[in-house]
Length: 224
Image 1: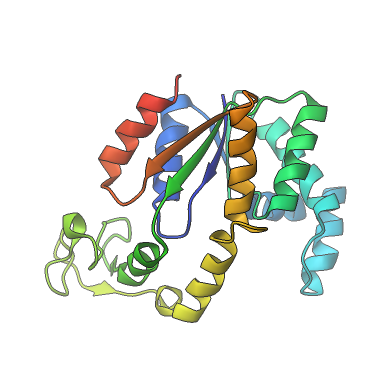
Image 2 (image 1 turned 180 degrees about the vertical axis):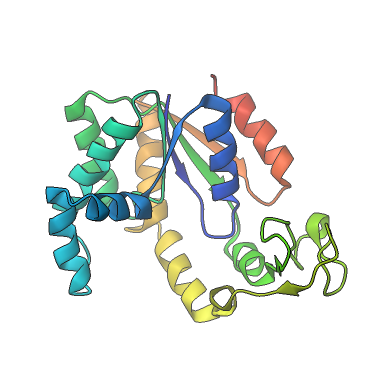
């Protein structure tokens, strides 16, 4: 099974992606890791990508798409979950063409829907436990609201990540994601149109609810 997942920062996309990975034994392929692996391993594509990265420039799609495809083939032989790519409508079209040429199925496209303001609050409300950063604490989510300034799980001291409090940076990332003309949501809707033509399946879930509820809805809509 091959799955593409969309969701804004703050939607719980990473959490749900990990749950899907475990449930269906998929290779969880994250876009940033693709670049790191190719550069670390010194592949031809990695060398080309590094030239652009070292100059502070965006890596062109002509390099990125083959890199993504190669990683899907190598690591996702038994199924994959692609997270963080495509980020715009152009990349979505090129990825679909590349998958078709390679004879690779795209079984499901998942969109975790979340209001932009809620997504921003979730990011800014995250608190990290000094004992275990995986202990869930968020001042804006009732189910995991900390006990004052203490971790709700173990009572450890809490702190914030500096990038979680950078509202300008959050808005910039969300500007790209919520753009329905050329941005990431435009990419998602491209696949939604393909689903309407019977070429893939498009699953939408409400990301404002708790993790377990979202998980159960996703699993009920995705056939193993």
